[in-house]
Image (cartoon, rainbow, N blue to C red; front, side, top):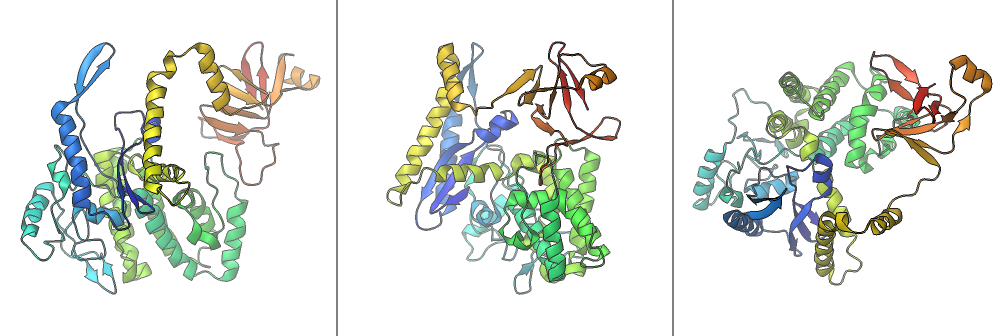
Length: 469
């Protein structure tokens, strides 16, 4: 649920689809147009009624000749911190009992701080929260942070506490990472910041890192993907170079707790042992925060790290439930607005057209004439000149002949051609001879743990064999 100008968009993601299909085929099922914020109980009640009506009748479909009746169940909701409170009917994070997953009262110190308490903080549960919602109806004040009933309580199988996910993009990246960078920058001199600026733009990274980070001095302008890349790839080599000069070793080790914990949470497969280690890392990170950075550092975003591992245990790695895809859908929807007049009609028309295109692609495209399909693919696909494909590997540009002496020395066929760029399993590999300033795709890690630098890809087009030099 995210604002587009004066609009709140409600998206659905189908959990049973393959991951790439799931991310690309987001369904926009609700739009709120107003110059004021949506009152969530009213807005979401319409959605809840729709889901319950669909499930009463079922969704009839034919799969492989068999007629099935499907039901649609809402498992989880992903919203940022500002929208999370009104969606759940709980006090916002800057108020007492503002945590969505536990009954931490918070301590006011200019703002609400979530310090570690001497006693164990009870976790919120579905049944207890429903009871608090009932009590809040006849109360003029929030009851342990609960302000009003949450419409999702009417959804079958939905857990109103565990079904709300600690959001990774805003909470961890634009929240904790940005907060920590602010503390580090205060202790760095202008010369040290300038040195870091020069270093970060000189680091060459693989092509998989699609968003290259800008200078440290412009960190306040970074987007979430830049923060992610900085935390995982740039921060440790950069900060390790200025230990005891600008960043103490204790603060650096404290930062490592956050980086390693986040790395574990982002893996495709997470074992129970790794999950327990991540929980220990985040707990240590939160516990040491006040000593190293003061009480004001005990923010809501830092606190929710304590609930992140439980969410991953329930719903999988954080990348499967982040708001990256929903933010992307918002940007895509903004393309529909060509003028200020009638913006709501433009957005609705755009959403309807997008849904219709998906239907046409799925049901009609596979049935059209082969020549028509080939023409459409030629028009819509990006053209790449001069490339050849052997088995599952694509080589780019025209191949060149090897020197005769080198052919004999390496016992290669006279049909061999040399390439400097290839793609295998959607991963780009390039020759070290291609001089690039900010990207590097020539270093590879072998199965035996050793590293290799790629100079050439030698292909025998006749025998369809590949030799890497």
